[in-house]
Amino acid sequence: MKNEHQQYDVIVLGAGAAGLMCAIEAGRRGRRVLLLDHAEAVGKKILISGGGRCNFTNLGCTWENFLSENPHFARSALARYTPADFIAKVEAHGVPYHEKTLGQQFCDRSARDIVTMLERECAEAGVRIQVSTRVDGVTADAGAGFVVETAAGRLVAASVVVATGGLSIPKMGATGFGYDVARNFGLGVIDTRPGLVPLTFSADDREEWCDLAGVSAEVVASAEMSAKRGAKAPAFREKLLITHRGLSGPAVLQISSYWKPGTAVMFDLAPGGQVLGALAETRDRATAMTAMKALLPGRWAERWVAKHAPDVRVMSNATISSMEEAVHAWKLVPAGTEGYAKAEVTAGGVDTAELDPRTLEARKVPGLFFIGEVVDVTGWLGGYNFQWAWASGFCAGQVA
Image 1 (cartoon, helix red, strand yellow):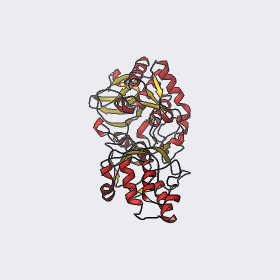
Image 2 (cartoon, rainbow, N blue to C red):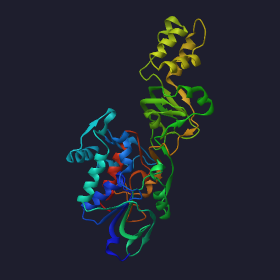
Image 3 (cartoon, rainbow, N blue to C red):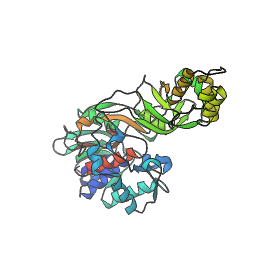
Image 4 (spheres, rainbow, N blue to C red):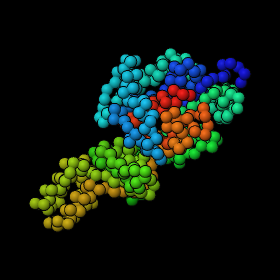
């Protein structure tokens, strides 16, 4: 502990997106920064994101794209560091990128470009990076600020930034360490759950639908949820995919972050409008089949007609109306999710009521910061969680 190289101004725990950004900003201020990670290399989740091309931000990112007990908490950080700011960094480093649908920004070549860019900026800012280092605990020290106990020895720093992520993708080393640190300092933690995760069918639904595994369609997905602090039940128009265990695809991943066990999810299979208008003239099953096959893949259309269209010569107005309603409101109660192993993010986390929204510093513990996924701020699919990582890391790095 007396060795000079073991004393720092800032120790950042976790070398993911948020931790790297924070370390860079703190280093640029002339702070002596140590960036620690238990993995053998930095940015491991960055490298696998976006199918290996890193969906690094979204042009449409606002606080309304995030889920939290306090949905307004992310406003300040997102306003201070915007998608345009990160894109300017990408362009300054000559990283080729392109926009896909819905404002999503991807690397042309590989997510490795983003990691290399951040490593280069760490080096330029004088940040020391130490990987393959297990952190066992963080305690307060009246004289030094904080003591960080590691497998390689004891470190001290005036400030500690916790950027250890959540519980998603445990095979990459995800743990609940950041939540433990918060609790040990008396800070609240909102119950965590898998976010952006496939949903699983109940036994009955599995029997009825799982033989259609592999078929997909564009839908509008929504979830039952109570209005809270002005929140509205969201709806997402994207692809749904039936799997051998349940439902996946972007629409399902999006709505999963809002889904609560025991409640229903709903899918409008025809977001473009009326589907069965032709039945007003013919009133027969063959017309229903033709209409549904124009909307859904063949096997799915046949299953839907078998389930909803009565085998009668002439359908009544009430029957046609009921069938049209069913197209726009496929409702089911999932048995659960595929869990943290398949979740892209962790919803819940360190209670935002404990943190200053401008700096991400713990109100009760000066010098202790929490950024990125470990905080109860969860973004939509499509680059939003990366933008939260960049923004929260930037803000903490200005003061840590």
